[in-house]
Image (cartoon, rainbow, N blue to C red; front, side, top):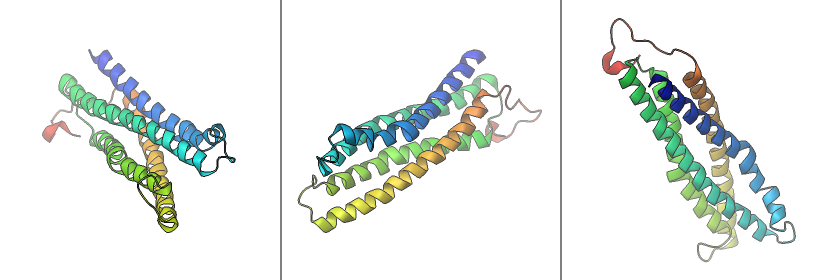
Length: 184
């Protein structure tokens, strides 16, 4: 059973890290280089940018589903490992997983819908929009996109640490005296 727990934890951490790495460094940038060419940029102008952004929004939704699932599995894994093995749960690992899961939730439930609305405003799909409103939405979108990319890089750094913690042998052993709630 312990081997199965280690396997589940390792596969989950690797999938979470790999998915975030792939999306942030490979898939995301492709939407605004290769995808623009596919949609006829520069002949089609802003239409190509709209379609590339719309496809990116669809992929981002799926990216956050992976974030939610992996975060939930990681939290469940920590709880089951604690209950089954009796090992002390390291606070740093718990805080790291909760923080990473929180970043994923904030990105998917708050940031991504906000960026979708700004994207629609930029291209006049949310109703009549003045050029000034479109420009304001474009600037705001750029700021939020930068924040989103920064959060992805923070997540990548945290996931490297989490993956390392999950894959290292041993871990925290049961101490002679237990701490409150089994936290170290």
